[in-house]
Length: 419
Image 1 (cartoon, rainbow, N blue to C red):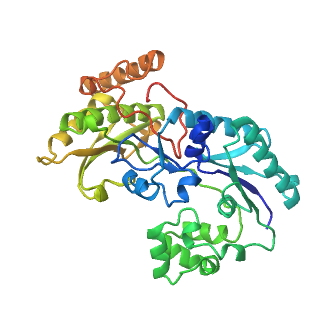
Image 2: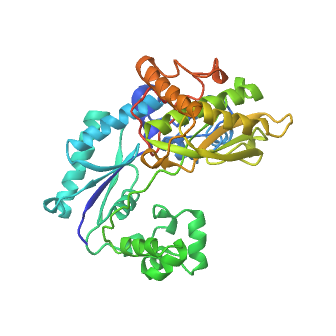
Image 3: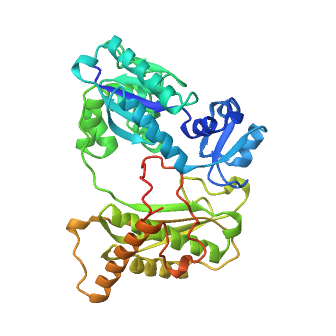
């Protein structure tokens, strides 16, 4: 199988950036958190913290129990994006990145003259040296090389930190057999369960499965064929997809864990999401909102969901991209939340049923058109003079609430219309 891709995966990226910025915490256990509160969770952990069992998504109270000397650092989104750009520049000085997969991962395509294993090793070592000199001595990466992006990414997971794995012609697929099925990107716990229902329990069985089994597991003949070809080392082109949702969520700081504070943050999140919707050129046909409530330490909302104590609601409306109309829908949903004394902990909202602006039909009503024009005018003012210089009264006093957090899969350009 020819080596077509080099995959660069930064090691403990967010924690490493913090250690690069502050020499005093180098070599010490560090966890990056969204806010400085015991009820929050770990966004990332340094390798020193991971040695104590601290993991991404772990509640801070539990992380502190496992690692009493754990140093907490509040996430610095801007610093991470700046470091990301330095790393992209460093990698690009050696080999052009073909695809930025996330803020700490990128894939580079190897041309024919670069595909010999010994040449790939030299390129990978040059990439590591470039990152060291341009980004800093705390910024390490693991690199994998393989016949397609997925297998190259799996190669980058073999040796961490600071590893290098190059799959030779005779290494695949048996070199993957030691990995769990979940090591394949896109195969999470639910998909692994479906695979087991079809008699696939090991990676060896996964690699040997026929296309029909993959089609049954993924519920799609096209996806089944894609996976069948991918595990056999073919370079299957990615199909361009349309954006499905735009949304934001935010863990409330202690002083905003009230109904009024939660609603103000919800309005702020909606402002950001709708401005972003306009920037990426889409219209929305619905919105969903949700709130998690504070419970016992063990039941605090997980970073990927609303937790055990939660409420959510949604509605549909004619496709639009103006802030006032969507804010009214959000306000109507919020009014129907259940009454009670529960303390709000996390707010979130998602714009759904998206449609590219080129396919959307503007409203025939003059009032709707004026609201759209007003929204675009707000964008221009905010882009010129700063984020949320112009905003609606529902977020009065909260224009700096819910700041931009860590960008995992999207790396923004600090557009002042949406931050």
